[in-house]
Image 1 (cartoon, helix red, strand yellow):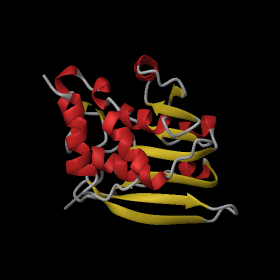
Image 2 (spheres, rainbow, N blue to C red; image 1 turned 120 degrees about the horizontal axis):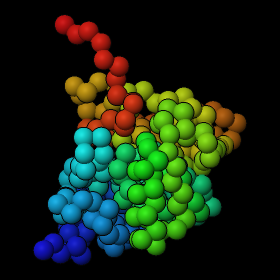
Image 3 (cartoon, helix red, strand yellow; image 1 turned 90 degrees about the vertical axis):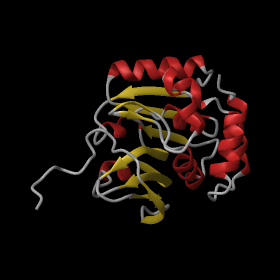
Length: 220
């Protein structure tokens, strides 16, 4: 049987702290947050390891180090309203809910959204709201947001995501133009007058969010 407390500490000591995660509040939460309860029974131990876990081909959690890099970059505040664009990264949404006033979680289907909502309520994470829709358009439904986390990769960042940011808002996602090379974690910031700045943080090879992979075309 997995020792969850030991697994969490090993994750912090072996992956996060050596990998540049320095925010003590974030590290403290990783030491106690039960990310395995959102994983399928057969994958619970994988929730704390490199690579994260996979439920199906289209549903996956973020690698813990990738997730922590993104959360740290977003600099969440208790007055912020956030959005997580998710295809199974419920742990990331749960982590973010500890730092924000409210977290909206976008899933692809109504059935999945209801399942995730039950998981979060069972974990006493009651400042979360789940809804469903296409990842390219639906984010505008409850916006604008202070913080947006794209919990996966996209070939190009949908313009609507950036438009859904409030002034001084932050968006973090993995931009991965081709599946044949690693993507890049990028932080997009919108300042008070609407000017957009984009910062590359580090490489990451994670799956694409549904509907946001590169368009298939002819190749030589």
